[in-house]
Every structure is written in structure tokens, then in C-alpha cells.
Image 1 (cartoon, rainbow, N blue to C red):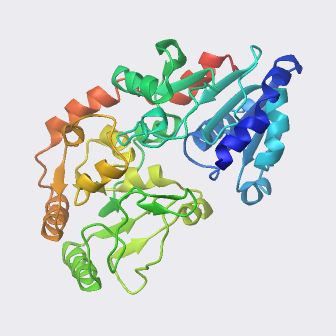
Image 2 (cartoon, rainbow, N blue to C red):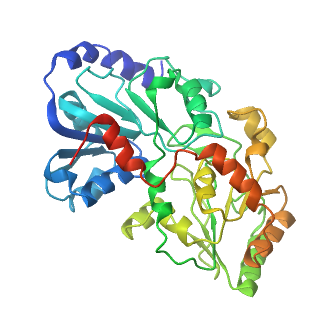
Length: 377
């Protein structure tokens, strides 16, 4: 029996208990068992910036709570994921992006599954071999458009009334116009293999660990090309990706990590705003990048293998990829040249997909979510 099933069995008696325990109408719990980031942190940042913590007690239960607790503002507490369980049984509001308590919400609670992106690859009930019990441990889940509302309904086996068409909190940043672009190309690959998640999705097996760049010689060639173009390439691996390579000897290719960004009080959305183009693959982040209408190159060298081992939520994923399809080193090289020189033939197609994917993303997702559950100033 897997650890998830064991936890569900152990938690089963807590559902009836949760229904009878009194709730604190001023207690908000934000939960994340894979680091305090993404939509969970975005809604927290919004609440702190506008002073919601003066009216509500905010408890952040996260796996890296020690990193954050030293700078906690007034009326905010960072605790472990274990201690978060007790707070869940007392809170009136809960938000989570990663992980959950397998306990059904009380009628006196509002629990929102913020998730961490609109999916292209399968998640939840659609994922092959998924340990999905069909039970709903939230009152609401968010989506960025009617198109994705239908997909989230299928992934989590919920009715339409469970889906809030609010947009994603983390994308609110992308509507900030007071940020200067830099000669920067951002590379955000999704994870292929992760010991943390105990999974392998089309593992990259080459000298560099990066798709389409098979050798260190090719990596140095890209570095030299970027120097000629006056550009930098910043690679931010997925937080769950196993990293065994480095680019310290290169001048124009840089590698950053989740923790490295956090130490600078940044996240990938700060990088996205500053970049001129994006390289990615099947990561949901490209749907967010469409809001900027800037060039995207998709590394699809392993798309058949990825579809076999993980799968996609649509029959034709490439129809939702408005950008160059990169399946070789030479195509990757050519995309970098075109992006640096401003040669872009995908603007109208990006607009089309953006209207499909982000019709409910307006720059005020945080406020819309808080209003929907009754958290007011």
C-alpha cells in the first residue's frame, strides 16, 4: 500500500471530527508541502501587501517553513506541514497549491485548491496509473478560462460549480508594466525524473541533462552564439528536477534554482517579465507566458515518449503550442537566433491560444479568489 493510501486511511476519522470542531472565522491557512511558492505564495503576498493580516490570523504550513519564519510579519506564523493539520481543523479558510489534507471540508470552511498551473500533461484522475480516489477534498478549484474549466472538471472529477473562473494568483505579476525587458532568453523545462516525486517522465540521458543539447561541446556552442548575439540564456529547472550538471564555466548560460530565486526575493514570474523569449516543453508555464505575447520555442524531441509515459489532456497537444517546434539541436540554435533578432511569425497564433487559455485571467486573480470565499478587508 502506497504512502498516500496509508495517509488517507489514517485521516478518514478526521472528516467527521472536522465537521464538529468550532472554526475560527479569522483564521486563514495556506498550505504547501513542496515549498512555499507558486499560487500559494502569490495569494499570501497579495494579502500581506494589502494588510489582510491586520484582520486575519494567517498560518502558512509548508515544508520549508524554517526558511520563511524568521521574517514573518505581524499576525503571520510559519509552521511545519504536521502542525498545519491542527490549524486546518480550526480554520475557516484554506488555500493550497501542493499537497492536501485528505479530509473533507466542514460546511463552515472554504477550502480552495489553487493548483499550480493549467495543465497540458495529464494530472489527477487522467494521469496514467494515478492513485486517485475520486474524493473531493476542496470546495473550489480555480481555472483561467471555460476551456480549462472543463479540463479541471475532468482531472478532479468535480462539477462545474466547483470551478472558480478567476485566473491564477501568480499571473497577476505579469500585468505589471513597470518592468524593463532585458536581452534574456528564459528556459523553463518541466521535470523528466525526480526522486522527490518518485517518478520518471521521459528522462533525459545525455552529457548535459538538457533536452536537445546532447554534448558539452554543443552547450559551449550555444554559449558562444549567445555572446555573439549579446544575449544571456537563463535556465531554471523544475523545482522537482534532479540536477546533476552545471554551467559554471560558461559566460552566457546561467543556471538558477528555486531557492536561489527566493534568496533574491524573486520567482520565475519576475524572470518571465524581464525575458524576451521563452524555451519550454510541456510545462504549464507557457500558458502563463502567453499573456506577454512573446516568442516561445517548444523542445519536443521526446514528445512521443512523453505521451506514452505521462500523456496529455488533449488529443493534439501541438495545436496548443503557438511557437517553433524544436526537435533537434539545429532547430534550437535557429530559434535563439530568431528570438534575438526579433524574427517572430507566431504573434497571431499566440493571441488565438491565449484567448482560449486565459480568457478569465485579468490581473486581479488574488482579489477575485478572496472575494469568492468571503475574505474581505
